[in-house]
Image 1 (cartoon, rainbow, N blue to C red):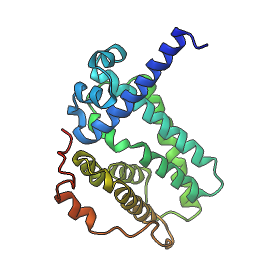
Image 2: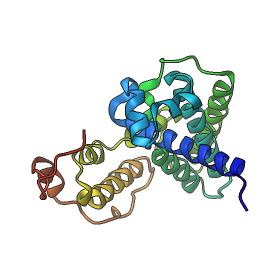
Image 3: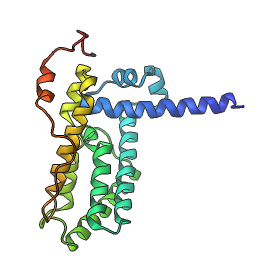
Length: 226
């Protein structure tokens, strides 16, 4: 039988995961001005629960960035373990895009990085540099492309203004079409890094309804979420 202490520990861990996920989502829309109340509400917990786990908003941001830096380093290390230089580079790029570093860019400069964050960032930078160098040596990457070029592209692709707007409007029926369109845009952008011509664009061609539907009120007349 699960003890009350074990059940409580699981609840705390579950709430923490919800808080971190909610913070990333709110930051993607509101940036560094995201309110603690908005983050707590999105996570489905009280503001008091958030402050019991993180004493300040800056402490929450530090935790988010630390997790992200570990994810980037893991993705780069996994990419380096792959035999194919292009596949290894794309593994890192796709994993980083999907983890959403662009949503954390607004908090840059709002808190003091910890020593652990600085160390992880350095390890990640060196791993990405090796990925890029290896791809250049295999002549599969466009000449002149640098690790910084790659990181800036990943930051741009990790955000999806279309998906964010549809979420704010409560247009869940457009979610699959928006995600498909985003995957195509990501593929098109990353294929532009190739030193040789790429294959066909994946997924179904998006229609203009993705733009038109954003201007139409919800079919059921419901108001978008605040």
